[in-house]
Image (cartoon, rainbow, N blue to C red; front, top):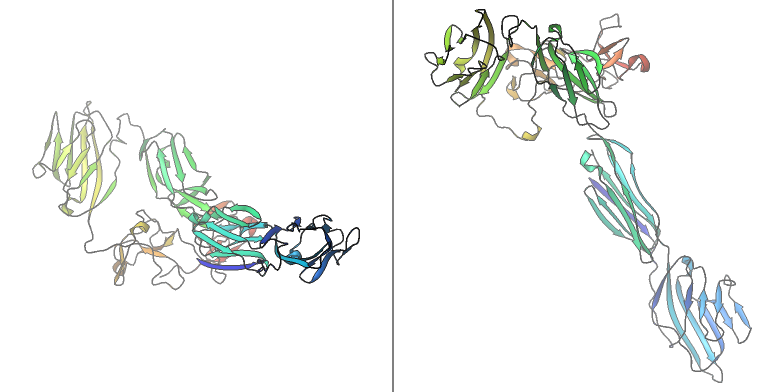
Length: 548
């Protein structure tokens, strides 16, 4: 944050008084513009026969007794003299009335002259207090904001506080305008305030103005929830997918199946009477048109199975799944291989061609698995403990129903060893989620973190090795060996020459696109729209190279 304080305030200080006689009190008086001021003299011992009032050296009013009264220039109608006491009253004070006033008096029957001096400071009251921010619409981590707290008034004190600011300045005697001016660079949502500007001086109470910044942000990480939870469902079920993401203004949400937009938008996707052909990886795409940011949720895999009359089994078998476990060898770890509840007479789990456990009336682990596995007699859930790399491979479940029908199903278990000797910093920024590249040479496969590129390991997308600044990732552990990669989708793709980011998703014709396309070019050139609707705005650009 940079802070610049500019202060220009008029201050009319009290003059050093010198009291020649005792006609006037030895003090300075403060008054506001527009007030009236009465100069009261100490009563003399006898009536006066002559009195003269002056401001600096300029005559204000002179009386030689009776009705013989004369006014100085500018004072007729503004100055009044009490013919009995000799007191002076000035009406409707202005800033120019600040200064030294003197009085000279001669008494009846005496030759001595009495005199006195006093000072008057006229201050402009506080007015025109303003607290403004520019620009009025800010984008998090992108915009800078100028905050200005200003006021008019003599000898004013200004305070600006809130949002990490706490500045106080007091006026100097040169002008009647003061300002506190600050700049905040790359605003964050926590900088929105509220901010308070407070102004006051000796003749005015505090005048307060408040302001809250309009900071636009997000969408943050998109989170998807399925109701019911799943991921396995029977045909005919109703499924509701909900997508949420912190965003201001609220994010526009679109839905995709296997990476292709469905043309459905809104925070909820309701799938009614689902069928097997609706199985796949669902994801939501959240977009904020104000910030230009868009994010994708992790993919939620939905498996819809036909109802065969055997609860929990699909087409005579449990659905195949792939389970990936990250562990250190010999550390106590458990993985559950599950089948939904079913009616059974007998069941058994096998690893490759080796028996793991058999359930008749009771469950009995096979040789080599005693103490490492257990089986739920009701659900046939297999729990394995103390996994090793040798446990990776194909697992199968066989059940025999009460009617004598045999059902089988397979599942795959992947066991990966933890990386050792690695150190992580700034862990609050680490995101554990699948990122699916939008193009490259392995479309449909997620980024593999960590991955090795040249002599370095990466735990996030990187622009190393590219000249166009696009962030990419490897889709296998070792890019040097496999050369499998893709561009990370949550980052912006900038068009060549114009350096304007592509807008995903965008509409062209009657179709929505979540990636650069060759449609409509006739030349095979990849392009994208730079606004949400190409049909309306006709804004586009050429996409950068897709080769490493």
